[in-house]
Amino acid sequence: MIRLGSMLPQAFMVGIADLVQMVGPEKTCILLSRIGKELAQTQGSGLEGVPEDDLHYLPMCPFADEIIRFVDLFGERPEEFKTIVKYVAEKEAMDKDKVECPAVASILCLMHNAYRKKRAEMAGFETLHLASRPSISNTNLAYNEEAIEKAGKTKEKIDRILEKGACVFKYVKKE
Amino acid sequence: MDIIAAEKLYMNCVKVLKENQHTNGGFYASPPGTRYPFIYPRDHSICILGAISAGMLNEAKRGLEFMLRAQKPSGEFSQRYDVDGNDTSYKDLQIDGNGLVLYALNQYLKATGGLFFDSLADRAFCLQHWETIEKAVDFILQNKNDEINLIHTINSIHEYPAYEHGFEIYANSTCCAGLFGAVEIGEALDKDVEEWREQAKQVRQSILERLYSPRRRSFIKCIRVKYKSSDPIGYDAFASSVIDVDAVEYAPAHFGLIKETDLRNKKTVQRIDKMLWDEELGGLNRYPELWDRNNGGYGPWLHFTCQLSNHYTAIGDQDMADKYLGWVVEMAHDNLLPEHISTVERFEMWLEDYTNAKILRDSKLTMIENIRSHPKWKEGFAYVTMPLIWPHAEFIRAYRNYKQKFIAD
Image (cartoon, rainbow over all chains, first blue to last red; front, side, top):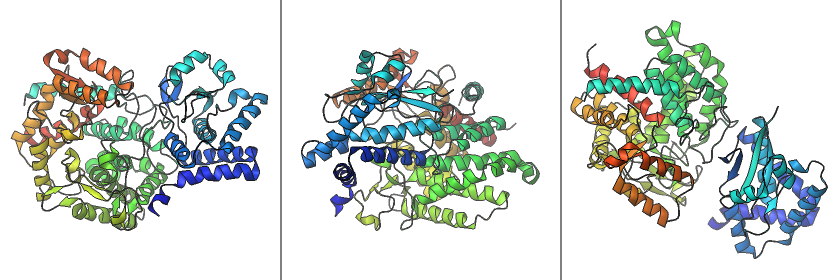
């Protein structure tokens, strides 16, 4: 009973995996983004992250521990999570507004970026999500190269920030 | 105490306060380009109180306007904001901010009225922000546990959940004082605030019963409880008490919940003085050295030393008030005050501990460089975060109290 109370984040991820099987990755992605936006509304306007020059980064992923716990419990990362990340990458490749897409290294990046983006939007900023690093390994880093270019940065610069951070983004004040 | 030096420091503190208010109204925690160029509701509220004390009511009003407009939809005031009022917090709930903002607002209302409260008090400002006040109160009450009648938080004044997660003395004192403040504001505006008054009384009673240890003859730091709604709290995963001495155990009297002369307060202050006065450096440490969480090395904090001086001033003990405030005056460098002071030896000990434990963050490297390059380093002192605005505001308040009590016009 006690352990179950602290397993709610794991339950959420089990639910996401099941949802991919039930309704497919497209609707699951929509749901994750919607959750992020809904949570953002409760917190109001805000700019998260540590400033570094004109960029911001998060020193650690707020979900890293839960994702690692999930993998510890259920073995390797479930196929459904990989399906989501692959679906997002393919969809974004065809998106004419790719610059506005999130750099998704794990399923929770979708929810997190929607949250961050909505809060920044309420503060009058656009968000460019430049890159993120998965919590489980340092391989399969996710980049949004169009966003990096629009931010006027190089991949090398972003990689240097990723060495000490989990994801990199840029806020642009709306005209 | 060297009164001429104290007077010079006071004048500069007022200047520092003015110079570190952004045009949008927010008081920086430390000046732009230094360690904390953000607006923290806790530091900011004390700056507002400092401004009120110095008679800078326009600055106080601008500060309040900034903060009230930055309230989150839930009614919470975040850990910190940028100069435009955008939430830039990176830490979890610190509910004392809600209490402090309400407390400062009521102090402002009283100061604008002075002896002619009925005709002069700035009711219009409070009325304009009444909805914000209601939401701030509601947020505090949402975090009240009805089994113990105390307010739950994750962080409090030290931003240190390991010792503050639960029902913590500073968070409860400020929130209780904030609730009473909201009641007074409501009364001035002819609002029905009876329910708030009852809630505030419950919290005060509980502070006196649950957060006071008769055998130790001292207030205690915290009843550690993980979840605000644990019922019964005895089964909560954290259920325990933090009985270590902490400078903020003086908070019930500091925020007017009990008299300075109340024996419970006098004994608490005696324990704080006995256990936290730094025998090597002078000045008041914030908590025991063994908590080992002291960026830049363990040592006395200027604003806690100022705070406790208020007790000695209030009870008319000039020797002790001199000891406390005089130390602050002596430690000022170019009439500026740091966050805290350590020794070179303690600094190196801290650096070793944090380096070995691999918990030294990149952001601390600039702080380390600044400590080592400060002129006081060569005298054997580590001046950490120089200047921090908060102690300047505390000195303004403490020194004015001192002058009013001990120095005739």
